[in-house]
Length: 350
Image: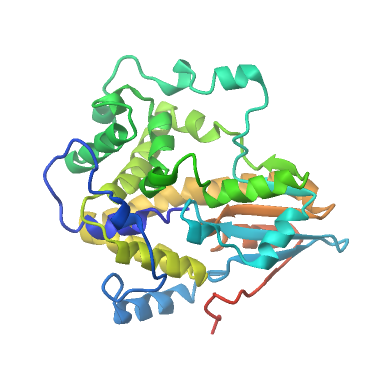
């Protein structure tokens, strides 16, 4: 799920000169005091166009879904937002109640390491570091995006030039985080981790729908270098210096309103202004084919045995829910009944 991209993509319309660290990602830029679609970020006419196009996307609206197995066993599916902003941790009572009472709580990954050896090897040089250097050159990123990626690593404390000594998979993993999470990192959890903590505190079994290092392993393969480049380019665009709190507030609002299909279309429109419509379409299709579509298939395969028993709470990035290859459609194709549970903050489906 790519909610962190909205503010940066809008900002990338004005490309600045090189910078060493991302001091422009300030607390003020990241602070949202009024969650609403701000016309300064997304004009009314453009929003209407996005909504019209989004109406054709299956399951494009809705954060919460009830899953019923053929034997009547009931589970739930929630679309998360990967942010530690307290407003994204203010969950509907129904959702919090279901995660607390879950038998199994399933998330994209389970970052809790199972053994001491796993903890010791969490940053294994074999798959995290590229001792030869030259990673950014081999990925052939645009110069401005390469600068922003390097700046992001500096801001995270890795040091100038570190990106060149990370493997493509490790660099991609690092770029997936929202820079606005930095201010409360280690204090407030992102929403996914918050949900996992609630479930674990009540004794639920925690299920990772994908191996913790699956993404890194895949993108470290030479044959997937173009895919790594596309993902890093997409997330790199979110690091532009000109973003505003209004854009972030709009992203929060679209999420709370459950308008995920419209949000994805907005992402493509913003990219198109920077890299052109054809390139934006290619990058989004490439990234979605793996981060969403391929991974959704694996998520469903992992979850199905538990869903047959019921009592499962699934929390995955909200953009995983929509579309013909989304989680909702795939679960239905697997023989389960999946129905939307409307929430008070959401926009009703026409």
